[in-house]
Image (cartoon, rainbow, N blue to C red; front, side):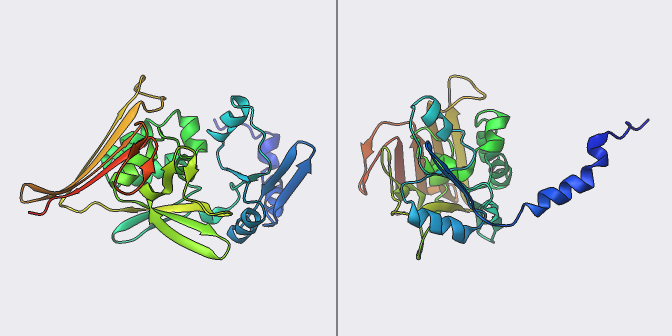
Length: 268
């Protein structure tokens, strides 16, 4: 027999109507003696807020930022929460690439990236617990620039690029160029990560990603390696290799912390 309707079922339509009436796309702004909090609902509003408060901390799922407060005892002021900006949760697909907005959850990102290669799906499945994957975002995992972040090495090996937006500017850079040094990213004042563009793999491309951690599930990486090879008639023509969890190194382009990128072109 069907369960008997309760008071929540009876009030469903009225509750939904009241909730939808609150969605007015106006920015929520709260301030007090301990700081300021903003929750924009549109991308232009977020751009304006970041231009006015370039020192602000952007928060999405807070799976990492919350530890800055609880463990690091940091005072964050102001805080800008991007959970209402629907355009940051866009997923787009072209003939040769996949675009994932910065606000796409790690769970959803893993589902779409698994369509590019099974190793990506398995990598994201091992990213923390289900609650972490559902709350945390792809943009946050990249923008916080942890040297043991799972997403960056795999996406670097794939040749992904980062979409950055600021007031009056919009640019796209190779993902590896975003990480300048420990605690330093290539972000201009007021600029933020809007999304990531991931190239699709061709029939001549071989990709693998390996994560080593103390626990198989629900653990951060000790080291992560990702490898993309271009193979022609049994001969490797190009190899692009990225590692996470490494010490600070210097390559021919610039110093980086926590990651090592090797891009090899074999001229034969």
